[in-house]
Length: 354
Ligand code: KG4
Ligand code: ZN
Image 1 (cartoon, rainbow, N blue to C red):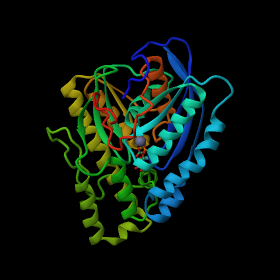
Image 2 (image 1 turned 90 degrees about the vertical axis):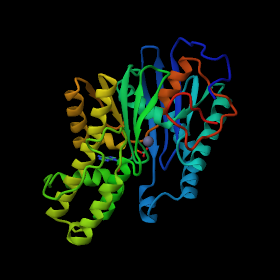
Image 3 (image 1 turned 180 degrees about the vertical axis):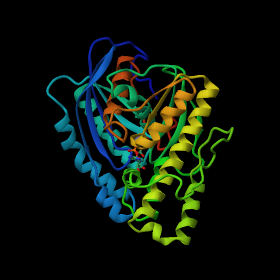
């Protein structure tokens, strides 16, 4: 899909790139300024209606699409400063198809009207960029990237800027989804990760026992459904765990530790196998302090370093999409105007949106 215009034509100079993110329930737009040495975030806006999803028990596609349609023009106007706009990029996948279509169509129209280059961006590539671009730098290679969000849990090996392979993924729930479901079981709100982290601060790990699925396995994948099932059985025996109080705090501390240990264990195995010396983590779950501490320890044990996004860049945002857009523009890797969305677009190289 990345043809359209002379392929891989290097463009020097400074680029102003706009990124549009509508893969799920956040409507987000950001503007970055970049050159070969790095980039700066000029402006960004993000809008979401979590109370609506929370009240309805999840995302309702039609409401989400209407939100994107209503909010995109105003948010974009607020983000776009005076001056030239060399590149426009929009998330084309993975994500919710109708939501992606709104952002992609809006992005194409804007790029067409402003005579900018147009780029269909992979949301997961945005996450992989975020630890670096949140510090104004382009990604360093080689590295190993853990993406842990509400929709994905992936370990990706990135030997260079063009080759990426998936070493492990979740067999059932994503790590963020596990946080969300466990939080819901004990009567906490959505998104569950920050709620569990807050509650866990008063609790103690080990007071309540939960399993660490796949920990110690020689296979590279993640699995969190066993944790959820064990928690359900515990709650059936002791419904008091879902009431405010110390037992619930102990439950949250144990659940958080279990997820953190599982993530760290799989990363340690992958570091040992690949010999990579840089581990990155991104996605909403990377905002969790116990998770980042566990990953830091795993990296140190394998003689590697951990790099997490600067606070505010962990969860979904458009700045990471604008950053990938700028990189694509500088590399002359424009997308075809005909590019469609791909709700299941893989982050592995060579697998493009249809
Ligand atoms: O990356 P993200 O914003 O969206 C997706 O692409 O899914 O991640 C959202 C997920 C939610 O499941 C949320 O519970 C989790 O990230 N999350 C956290 C924390 N903050 C957000 N999980 C654990 N601890 C946190 N502090
Ligand atoms: Zn995401």
